Every structure is written in structure tokens, then in C-alpha cells.
Length: 128
Image 1 (cartoon, helix red, strand yellow):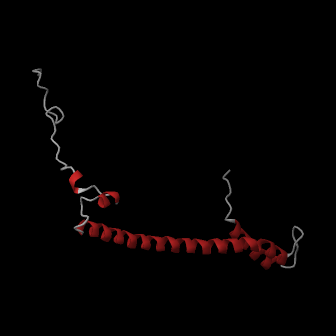
Image 2: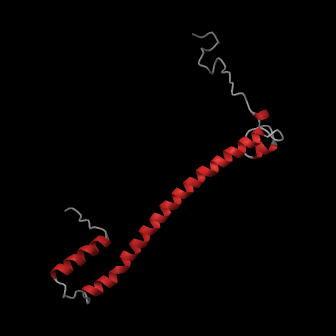
């Protein structure tokens, strides 16, 4: 037998309310009438609305943070260029290093030479 899945609680409350209003608006169930049921279940709707508002605020703050991040990165780029272009400091200064860059005098060329064995050449021991 397939397991029955129910809609979310807030949706179920709406279904209960609609059915109760339509079919038995004057009846009492579980010791409460329709108005009491609405009052007792209203806190869920309030919490849902509050969470939806907080979700919207959170999304707005994420967007604002992203925009601030872009602006801050541009400022960092401009300052780094300013340090590089300043004759008193430049690309080989302690300040440039302290900002997280590799000073010009400490950069490596990037040139590497592979040895014959490491490049996949046959062994030179005479074995064929």
C-alpha cells in the first residue's frame, strides 16, 4: 500500500477552514468552534509571513553584499596599481609584499626543463 503524503500544515489549515466554513460553519469539533480554530492556528500563518519577510530581507542583504564586494575589489585593484606605480614603493617593495603580492625580485621565470627520463625518453642503459 502506498504511503499517503499530506500537504504542508499551513495548506492543510486552509483546506480545513474552507471545508468547515462551507459544510458545517456552526459546528464545534475538538471543543472549539470555527472562530476558535482560526484563532488557535493563526500563529502559524503569522510565522510563515514573518519568515517570508526575513527571506526577502536576507536575499536583499546578499545582493547588497555582492555589490559592496565588487566595489571593494575595484578599490583594492586601484590601490595595488597605485603601489606598483609609486616610485617610492613599486613592485619590489615591502609594502607590495605585505599586501600579498610576490615582489618583482622574487618572481621565478616559470621556465622548466624536463630531464630525458622524465620526458618519456627510453632508458640509456642499452636495453631494448
